Image 1 (cartoon, rainbow, N blue to C red):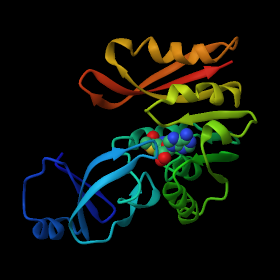
Image 2: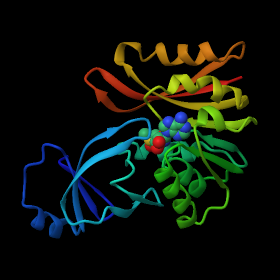
Image 3: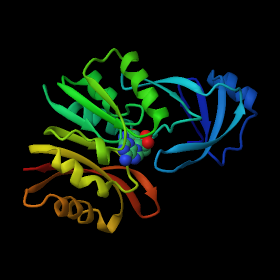
Image 4: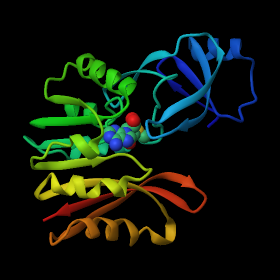
Length: 242
Ligand SMILES: C[S@@+](CC[C@H](N)C(=O)[O-])C[C@H]1O[C@@H](n2cnc3c(N)ncnc32)[C@H](O)[C@@H]1O
């Protein structure tokens, strides 16, 4: 893949060396062409170049959901689209869900659209992502999502959720205790980690068990998301905490 279309913006791979940008923009019917060099910091902010056009705000449709975002301010997490729908389909009627690293609503919006959750508490630390999270709640006409601006280490609601999504891969294990403390008996966490292949069956579940105290941890599923680096996978661990 040499490019990805997000709404009406084309993001080229850093090594793209193809057609001129005007032809490319006409062929793909896009207003802007960009390269994202990398994503930096805790708030996952893009370092980017605009190669054609000027507008960086767009609306991307995915899995029946609308995601408005500004690609110069917030990241689009590519490669997670199947996971976003998988989680939404797991949510049972009347569940209370916490999305600890909500971004622009990558998980919260599909849960709102595709499930009958009672409520989704969506926490985001980056004010720009939070802005689009709020816009996306309105855009998708959802009334059961509670957006919270802040650090989930401090602001995660202290009640008992049925399901907690931990969609962040930098130091996610540092947040496990906060998550487990807010999880109902028998509740499920979806814990993301980047893990060397040879540790995949041991390290993530050991990290969860280490923070669960005397609660039983049941491994439900290990779901591979994508290759993160040579020999390193981005995985999601579904674990039930009894
Ligand atoms: C990489 S994005 C991933 C979004 C989405 N969960 C996914 O997996 O597709 C992670 C988001 O977590 C946010 N974040 C990082 N640390 C956080 C914290 N301590 N509390 C709340 N949000 C945080 C970042 O600003 C970013 O928007």
